[in-house]
Length: 249
Image (cartoon, rainbow, N blue to C red; front, side, top):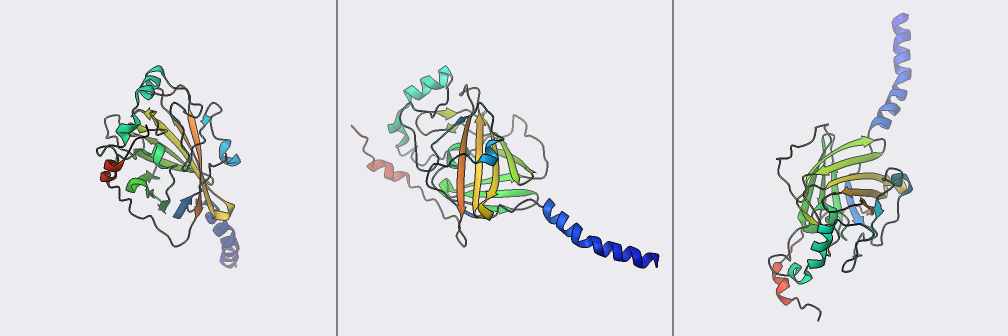
């Protein structure tokens, strides 16, 4: 009778255990996500985790700042001088026209992303410049300073409830605002991703700090909508189009 009672008790607990296991599983961010075209508004849930001193950058999507406009970011003297000396015509030369940005600029650009989520890592494909990010979820530690720097960097992530928290280092120097402000290879990026609207939206914050370039931290709020059945396409950048570029007088 004791064995029977124990079996009945275990069977009664099974639904409870199943619910608990489901609750412990992180949300699945997999899928094809199209960037929402308008500048994303701060997500109240994610905003609670944004540093109070971070400047909100309102340039997501196709929006871009004009010359010497940096959305409220305060630049170091050296970065300010570099921005003043920036020549936009050099960006449209054959050698630079297809130069890829880092994820700091690419993630908020007006192109879709596609996510493949596993238990040990998450792969994010960006249509912009055919970029691919690997976000490690296996608890590994930081990379040494001597490790290589790339435009996608080294990303490690963990789950905090329904939030995927990602820290990225080892990024090669590249643009922040596409108007002369470039981050250094010492930049540190912290992102949070979460599903919203019943899984129909993916929202994120991207906080970056770079004391060599910025005296303030910046944050972008980014939002995508789920599109079923679509995939990231090839980004075929032909530098020859720069030969037809005619700068404004």
